[in-house]
Image (cartoon, rainbow over all chains, first blue to last red; front, side, top):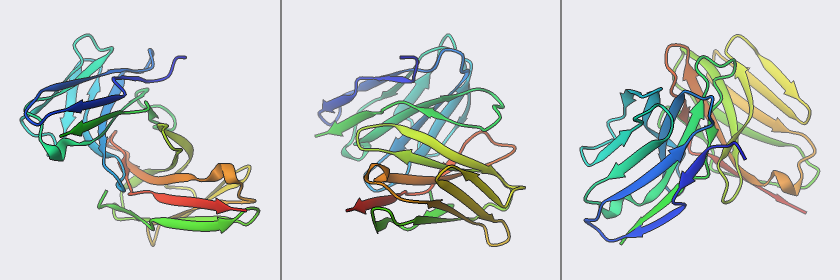
Length: 115
Length: 111
């Protein structure tokens, strides 16, 4: 399967702990996106990379959130000192630059539950 | 996404047509999309339309765009139970590479 892969699929943690999610995009895609989705809401943009460069960050991405894509391939999203409000599905997507359709290819998401 | 609005639920009978509506606020939107999300799965692109088009048809799917009213619709002909899912409208401007999504419309198809 050459789709977007996210790990772990589920993470339960206690408030105050740090968590890290990993995303492996489709190999020839050099744009990578992180979105957050809560129940009853659509995906909300967090940040995106072109290759290893982080080109834009949403105001939703507080200082406790950091994303990296060190070699322009996989990406990690770390949340420090988790809060209950961080509970959500974290979605990763990838795309080709200036693709004809601008289509994003999404992974199945990493669900975070903060107790 | 506050810039893209959709009704939350739609219930139809199997075999009928479904029409899902979306409004957006950004007049410079260049690309408009419909994504489908089935339970436990990621979002998948169903279809898209460029802002210089009024209509696009793809098998059972028809997309209508009213650029003046910033209104997008998705019609699914002969709706099947397998079409039950959440449908997200999304828009993207030409100068940005960041799609903005609506809250999604939950389509329920009953026999």
